[in-house]
Image (cartoon, one colour):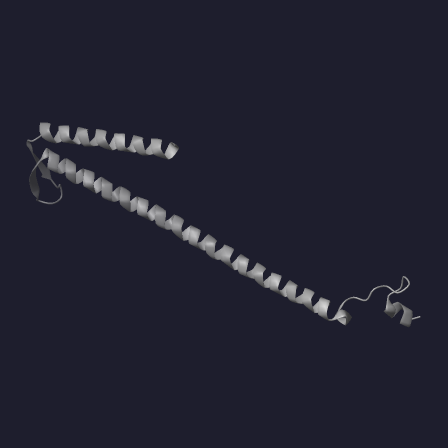
Length: 128
C-alpha cells in the first residue's frame, strides 16, 4: 500500500513539474545572451533552451551521484556476501570434521574414551 502511495506522489510531482515547465516555455520565448566571462564567447539562445540545458545538466549530475552511491552500496553488499560465504564454508568444513570424528568414534570403539571400571579408569587399575 505504501509503495503504491509513494508511486502516486512521484507521478503527481512529475506531472506538476511538466506542467510548470510547459507553462514556462510557452510564456518565455525571448532571446537571452549568455556570456562566459573569461572566454570571449557569447551565445544567443531562448530562455527555455537554457532552462532545458540546465535541467538536463542537473538530471545528469543527480544520476551520476546516484550511480556513485549505488556502486558503493553494491560493493559493500558484495563484500558482506563474500565474508558470509567464507563463514558458511568454514562452518561446513567444521560440520564435516565433526561428523567424521563422530563416525570414527562409532565405528572404532577403541578410539573412544574408555568407560570407568568399578569407578576407576582402566589406566588407574593398571597403575595400582
